[in-house]
Image (tube, rainbow, N blue to C red; front, side, top):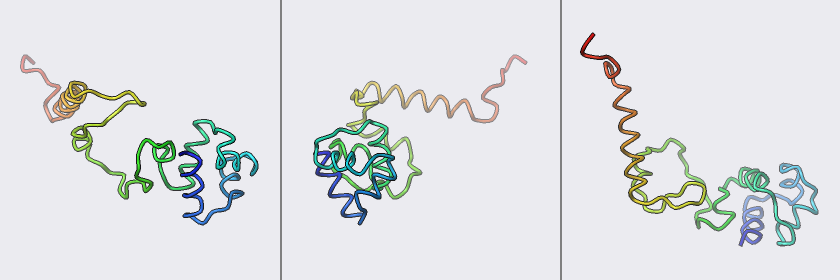
Length: 122
């Protein structure tokens, strides 16, 4: 799946193998090996390729079917914490994990409020 998506996106973005290879810092033959499935890039190379192709590493690796990155990078964390399929480096987060994260973030924000750090005994 990686090789197929890599080639499709490169062509869609109207880039040559040489252009992507130069951006990644590998020989054209090495990059061609990625597209043919003969070679496997490092994780760092996958991230660099994803940047050049304006997509995500997750899409290239088949973890999502959405090739276009989000148009806006300013996202509300509260919305993300309602998603059911969140993971941390590939480890799925359970509902209890997400609830705990939500509680911790609410606490952080509550502590930022004016006067939150002052004691009534002073």
